[in-house]
Structure formats: structure tokens, C-alpha cells
Length: 188
Image (cartoon, rainbow, N blue to C red; front, side):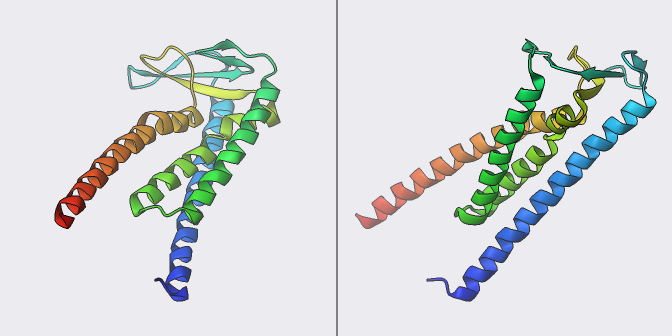
């Protein structure tokens, strides 16, 4: 049974992990805002600018309610406000999980990375709420639509972190089944 000192040390580690996640998220959000500021002040509006890479072009546009997969989105302010509420709930839930759940170190790191990326991914929602549009400023081939750094945080969650979670849960499940099988065999 852990004593109060061990519980206190455990909670301090969790709070530290949460602090790192929030700090990282704020830094990612700052990077998103900084790159949009630079794009808005230096790139021409809706004109393609070549780079040294054949797969990357600068193209600044202000997305006022169009999703390049889903098409026109009416009432983008309401959607952005709804998104902010949803993201706030997600941030609260992830924070609570980091502090309260019995997560191993690997899951603590995964939850912290998701939390940081989620905070960073709020850039488009905040920009729509305060400026009326999201600034997209590069086209990364083979994708035909303009994008921004915030979009890449979302892609990181979907295409990198979530597959890691799925793989880790499969591996953990198999380890648990093996351990249970070994415990059963040793008790017989």
C-alpha cells in the first residue's frame, strides 16, 4: 500500500506531465499563430509562390467557411464556437485522465502528446472566431488544397498518434492475455 509521500510524489509527476503538455500545446499554438502572421504579412493573397521543393508551394488564402473535403460550410462561426466547446471538453477530459487515471508511463506520454497537439490545433477555431477566417498558406503536393500548421497538428493526431494508440492497445492486450495464461498455468 503506497504511503502518503509516495502518493504525493506520484501526483507531482502527473502535474509535471500535465504542465509539459500545456506548455507544449501553447508553444504549438504560438507557432501556428506566428506562421499565419508571417504568411499574412509576406505572401500575396491567392497567388502561387514556388519554393525550392517541387512538392511545396506557398498560397495564402482566407478560408471563410469551406472545407476542402466536405465543401461549403454555412455558419462557420457557429461551427467554430461548437468546435471550441468540443475541444475544451476534450482538453478537460485529457487533463483529468493524465491526473487521475492509472496510466503507465507510455500512456501518460501519449495522452500528453494528444493534449499538446489538441491545444495547438485550436488555432483555426480561434482565428475563425476572432478574425472571421482561417489563414491557409501552403499547398503540399499531392494534396490539391491549401493548408496551415494547425491542420498538420490535426493530421499528426489522426495519422500518427491514433495508430500508435491502436497498436499499443493491441500489444498491451496480447501481453495481458499471455500473462493471464501463464498465471493460470502456474496455478495448476
